[in-house]
Length: 306
Image (cartoon, rainbow, N blue to C red; front, side, top):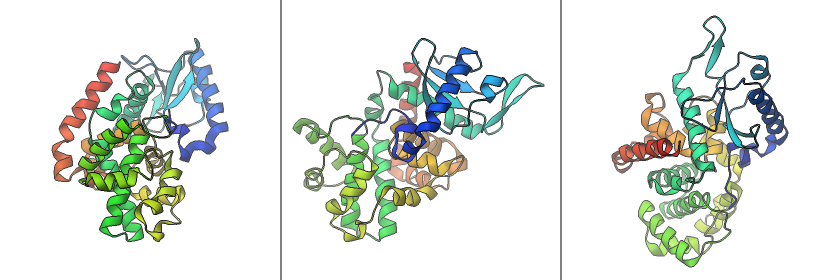
């Protein structure tokens, strides 16, 4: 599939082209005016905190956004105004929602990794993201459409293929890549190699969420899935996460690994999300046991990429 660089490249945000262009231009102006904040040890990230005419003129935006710096370099803008405010009396930005602040800034850091030379490392750092993604997507859809166990397993395999596809621009895997991916998917879904190859013989690379929906009925054989589409998937998944712009964040996370991994970090770390559908999947014994290693791997990756 086409690797989606930022949240604004994903299916849910593709209608925001004009707004994104306008916002990116405003970010450029604010950067030139010195109105954006560079966090410590972060070379490419810029915070929008307000407090100056140029910063205040930037339209609100929900996801880390790519824009060009003065020298043509890629920078990542993060709008923090929804989680705090500029206090003119203290002459500083005051965070009002620490949990959402942490999620936003972590998304920016992982987007920076994603866009850099170590972006593909997000795939190999742990099996947890694809394992939980596969369970989350397949189980949510299976409940809505009352799929049987066989159909749900096939959908879980397809979901794992979909997640792995987000790391490649290829339209089809080579035999070696297909065999390697099939082995991983068999382990995480606890399916037989035969079951996995049966799905991957249909499709080895899922282009995007629309492609996933288009293949769901063919792979599972369930006519109940004939009307599955991206909008319905967003509706089904929307209630599995909470917080600021939760439904849109989750819609982005379906196709954007840095966002998905950031959500998982919050699910493991923050009690605020403890009753969300995603967190409940992370609390299953095998996922919970591997959570510590996953967290350390992600944080080490972010630190080493700075």
